[in-house]
Image (cartoon, rainbow, N blue to C red; front, side, top):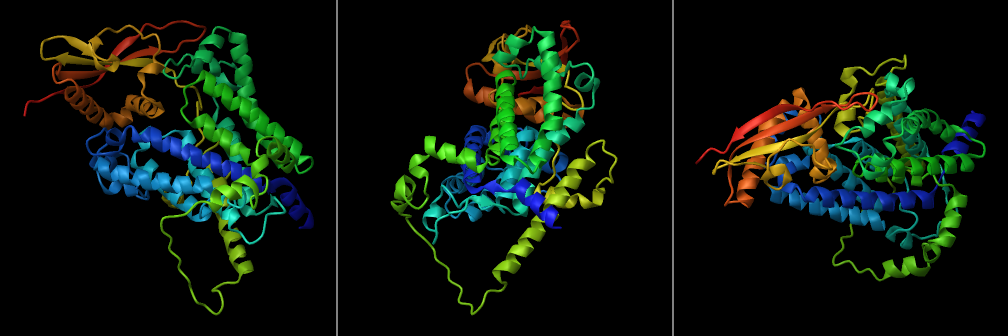
Length: 503
């Protein structure tokens, strides 16, 4: 037991300053995500958009989900919730009432994601889980408003708890499980997975175009990606010289995700993954970072950081006092209960993750999954697994105008043609729409098609009253990805047709 205790402390201790930086970074990502989503309040979250509430509950709802955003189909109601979420995220950013602001931010993020699951990607799952574990982490003890109000300065920045174990093992599970899910020969034998990924014009970025013509480089990068995900996480479990191995993990993953962002259009995915490893930085790295970049913030109880927050005057405050002779539970008992709860949650998440892999382990029964859906600790790290998606192509939104011409409203109303655009990825407003368009292709999501079609007709006619369309065809020009740089002939697939019926 003594050795086990020593192992856990050596392996899973974090620096309070590092997780404080991670808190600030994640809060910034939440605010960025809200800003991006806010540009599509009506489209993605209202009854006038592509997923009205009755369609959500009929086709895309889990009975254990919780969503405040699903209480109303008005975009104004959604705007109000967005404002509340932004306020909570700002409080988290500045470390004001950190634990409460973390809980509120997590609940509202969970609620927002549940409102429209058709635009979610793997980065959303990781963001949700990092905030979830952050509820149990003391990431407000440094670089925060709360730190300036504390009775004593933080002299010892090393911190260990079950929550730190959960945080580090969460990172381990993300990469290890995604490697286990990559079962296709293109990942493990042929080395062609990255070739197929860069064949997808819907997500191809400029640097991806530059390296695409080099098959041997793509083969090397494919195997590098697979074995990095499979083996690198185990460095986090080594107790000796842990600070060196953590720096290696953080450095490799930093370069890994910057590389992904330059080659593939993945939205905020890469920023969330980079933020996740910031909390791994050891004390030595944080000492260096403070001297170089955070000199005025070195001591949370003095200097510029305290000066900023001491000047903050809140317009209103509420103080609630409970006059009890003794607390309901003593502090050590509260801590033991909290540690026990986090340990249970961690074991549940580990079981959930491993149940989705090919490892010969007891699978989680379906009747036990309600808990994961309720608190959204359900996870699946399946990017490009088991094989890379090969049904590439582009959308042509062919509208028939009242004067008899055919236009492509996906390209600002120019005359329709079926030639591949110079940049397919530029047709998407943001990564949410790209993900929606990807889900739109699947036959099991055919319920989406008429609502998207009718939404496009209405928005076009409202914006172009002098050039209305009477009918719209949502066409997918499918271009299947072939091996060895072969080019397939695109085929035209009409996914949906809708008409603008006169009132």
